[in-house]
Image (spheres, one colour):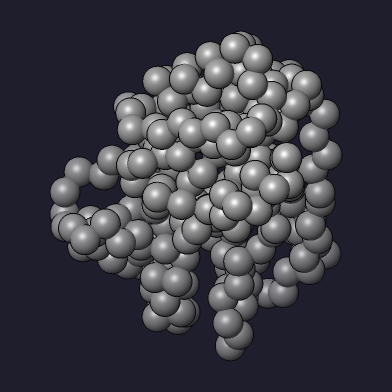
Length: 143
Length: 111
């Protein structure tokens, strides 16, 4: 995909590509400049997966690493755009992964839908309920 | 676009003097540096210590400057901090570019 999207202009995009074996729970993912997914395991700290990667189309001949995680029942995986973590408040302070993680921990016992709604509320409040300046997307999976 | 250009022997230092390197200034930023490369400068330091935010256009412009050198010279980065340092790490630009803490170290490496 990186070879296919090489251009002469400055266009590129970021992505997370992942495959879950729903029987074994094996998650394989590769990261191309996109924020690392947050993995929430019941009773454990939320951790951000991945060590980064070059965005798609930015540079030719890039090798992408594959990360493997064995999911356990009840694990939740949250994928999000940088519009979430880079959303700034009136003092130009970004929302940052730490506030996302705080919200996820607070919602550990809530449903996925309630968790996403809670993140959205926190983010809108942080943004001062103004219009977002970047796209904001959040995907939640529970194994 | 507030971009300060200084020469130190054969090394040209471009220091971004504004806190945001974003879509509105990415074009002029790139044009100035690429022109310097076309003029024959092959040892370039990009000082980002005053920058606290780089968006996708800004990052694309920085990479374009690297491509303009096309392996015939060096374009190195110094002074990244906080969110800019995190962005470089997330996109592995900290492995693509040689990174230095400050201009003195960068100039010394290229001299």
